[in-house]
Image (cartoon, one colour):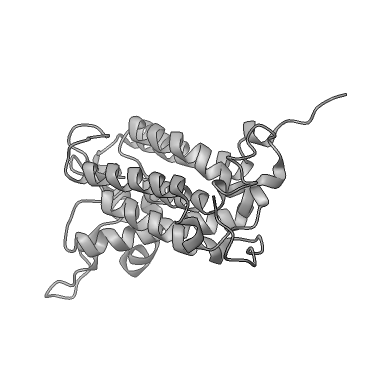
Length: 258
């Protein structure tokens, strides 16, 4: 009897499509334009997230290309750009497992909307903590962080993907999520959160550099994306919530890359 392929070994098509888009965009910048060439700097000005863009100068003139449109779309488009191949590969390595988990649960359209929402949340926090800064923010890490947080909402509970990984049942991805407060009573979740936030704090202090020399880790954007993933999960989740809340879940040369 022929066995069907197991979902745990298959990357959802929407995740593959996002990865292909990220690779194609970076390839075009690196091969066709040249990273940080004059043409590439124009791309960054149009599509990277630059906090200084939101300052009004005394003449009322636009300081950056793109005008009002760029002030809106760059909250998401910055996530499609990466500083170098290493930056892209590192984000992809985390995006595949966590993005796949969320994509299997949400479906393609909700997944893409969630990617955009968590990327935008990361940009909002970056803007709040780097107001007036002229260095472009690029990288998909805020959205990847949002995928990690969303996975926490359902992966650890009984019957979820981690508990049922040996059975590899597609039903484990669709288990009803318990309320956030119940999830936070699970010691495994608390441990995961402690490690995640601890690492990002270390990145912020420069103790653990994870990108190339001259690039800064935009850890505030990571946290913004992660918190958005935790709290917006229920907005995007198509699976009906579990009724009982008593069930226990048992970085230009200085581009901030995230």
